[in-house]
Image (tube, rainbow, N blue to C red):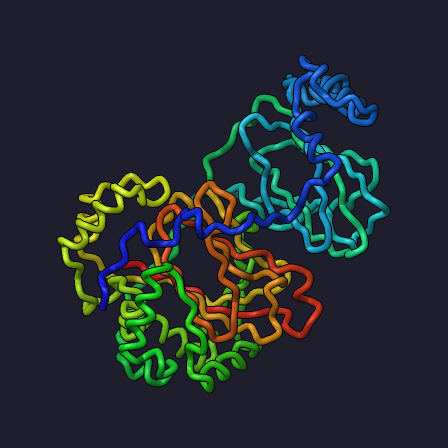
Amino acid sequence: MASKRQPDESVKTDKKKKKKKKTTCEETAELCSVVGKLIETSKNPGLGRTEPHIAGLRAALFGRFRSWLGEVLGVELEPTVDISCAKYEYTDVLLCHDDELEGRRVAFILYLVPPWQSSDGGTLDLYTTDSNFQPQSIVKSLIPSLNTLVLFEVSPVSFHQVSEVLTQDKCRLSLSGWFHGPSLERPRRHIEPPVPRSPHLPRDETLLLEWVNPVYLDISYQEQIQEEFEDSSEIQLKDFLKEEKFMEVREALRLTQIQWTRRGPPNKRCYEAASLDTLPQCVSACWELLRSEAFFLLLSNFTGLRLHYLCPADDDNDSKDEEKEDVLDGKAMGSSTESPSANTSREKEPSTPVCCGELRRWSHGDYTLLHDAEAARAEYALDLVLPFCGADWQSEFGGFTCYVANEEDEELLTVYPEDNSLALVYRDKETLKFVKHVNHKSSSGSANSFYDFSFVYYE
């Protein structure tokens, strides 16, 4: 077994691995060049565009309307107004958020749409909040209407979304932005309790022989897998389970006896998780496989991570040399400032490998989002996803997992769900992940949902 992966070898902000940024709404060609000039102050009226429609809009927003709005609210609004144009087309969506950034006081949207109906999607949905100021459910949906101006106060409870555009024939065009002023006082952010972690279950290799494709139990093949994994920090192992076991679980996942619970809040996640005590026997056995001692050891063999006490320790001298080279070459990942001695010390600390996991169901409208609490808790971890999606599930439906660098928009890695393909990704403290919104296209075929086991393992 090769030596344990060093922190700088995880999925990280390597420019070579970055992919093209994906967006859910795009600025129109006409107004894209206008946006920068529209963001100005009433003290510099000569800097803006001179076209009558642009100049008129600027004068209206920056002048008497801003003064009137400030009087209505009893707040002195600043001369600066942010404004941009957004075009939403089929399957575009803007998921739940509160708009809160320093200085934003009033949000506005001016609709420039053709005749629009609720069946077209693209509504502005407003949320109720709970006692922790977290969004709960949609309380009101506003249908876009031509030349209609919508205003709402930006506050700790101003959660809203633009629902997915469902029409293929229309474009949802709008101007939107914020008036600035003194921010409202924000209560302490609610901190979710950490997800419980558990050590392995005492199950031996008999479980592996029963469930896992024999090719992955071959020691020489495990060495090849580890070599590839250590080179790229990720791998997908196709046909991982024995075919008969995979088919048995896939059929059982459709049984009505399984109780599914919607997970939220919607500013962080929206999908269903299974209640473990309602799982059919074969599904429960698959769950035990992924938590078993034998599987922890198998993952150690695949990755070189210390997920089992039988995994050999690194050679101290080799580790020090590698860490020294990494620092000299500037390979330290992200904004990490750990010294080689700190890394060595951290690796020498004895620990019990643990994991947490869930069985998830994904269907139209489901997703997860990046959020501040996740970034604050990020740590070195091995992600595992085992999908049950069927051959008809297409990548354009969404539901794939994206890895991004903290505070950056570009993707480092995308993992698409594929039947019986075990995905393993080792990430560091500066790498976050989210699951792409499952869009309306998923409702058009027979495969309108899929399932996956999602686990995270920690050394």
